[in-house]
Amino acid sequence: MLRGRLELPLGGQRISISGGPFDAMPKGARGLCLEARAARVAEAEWQLDVPDFGLPDEAALRAVLADMLAAMRAAPDGAYHIGCKAGLGRTGTAMACLAILAGAVEGDPVAWLRAAYTAEAIETPAQEDFVRRFARAGLAR
Image (cartoon, rainbow, N blue to C red; front, side, top):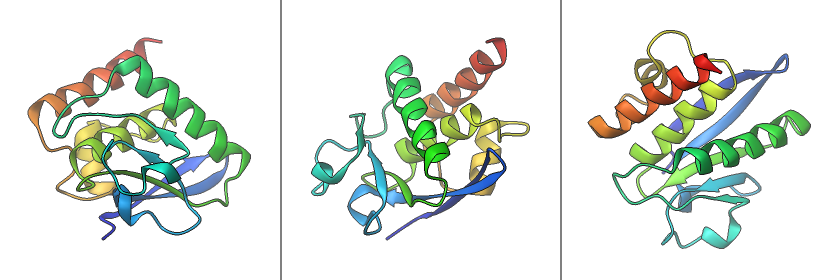
């Protein structure tokens, strides 16, 4: 079951990214899998293993999201998906950071993502802190 969609303005276009369990990735979508044990992990175009309720390595996340953004700019009409096991904590964290890199976030990135994707996204205080630090680091660059 998909948890929701995130609409990102990118290069004058609106890119739609579905989110939820990776195993619910829509057919034909290009996906980022955050769950090493997903049944459909072999279908992932991008993969970053993050423990359940855990945090990604920031440099690795930046690299995979930069690749994903480049793909979105090259094929804005494509289907994209980000998923973990439930599609909330790790997925929300990655979606928020993707939106930060795309320059789409206004105000608090956690509140922004929860309003734009699903209210249950970004499950732990550590994930909330990670997203806010990611945003601050992006502003300092």
